[in-house]
Length: 245
Image (cartoon, rainbow, N blue to C red; front, side, top):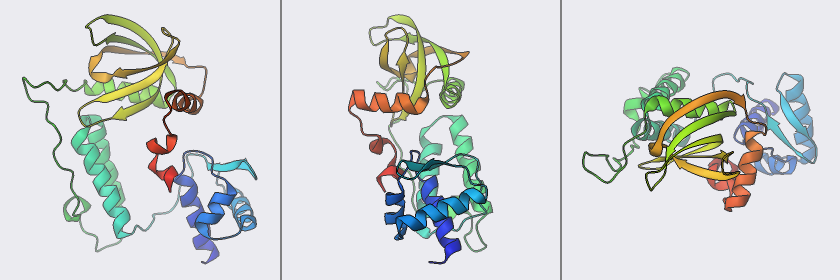
């Protein structure tokens, strides 16, 4: 593999992991020596890539490092389009519009001959369970509520919830949201609940109101995620398919 291609592959490998990845694992993936990985990391840092970490601890590419347009394989494009179609079919209008916009951006950087990705790909998302009137499925949460929750999660902000539990009891909670799970017919936000002093999970269709307090919660989201995964005995690899590669 040419050095330029190897450097690009290394950046792609770093971008595929949300958590620090060791030089040994990178070397195994790229089929080179660990010493080569150390040299290539140093080269990328000299070229402006912000890569945190050091030998023996693992490396992580910080957000914001941009690459020129990339080439995709047929299967990579199928995966991208299928994922965007799932988001467009199963989530709220805010994410739906973002999925369509992201797909358009991907299509814009592809070479001639690929056609319209929204029409020419062959994998589609089948219909899920529909929330028909009179059904037992919960109504979808308001789109603006979901958009606010996602923003507070990204910015690590404390939110104040008005929540209705399964017995119909209305409570006020202050939580530190750090994970949001999308299921076929519902969404669940996980957070540290100041009221209960414990990790709790909240169905978004039972959230009656949400307010951004403007306060940053005192611990990093990544730390909370690790503590939650240990407490709930949930492997983070289950949540991030990229880390299983």
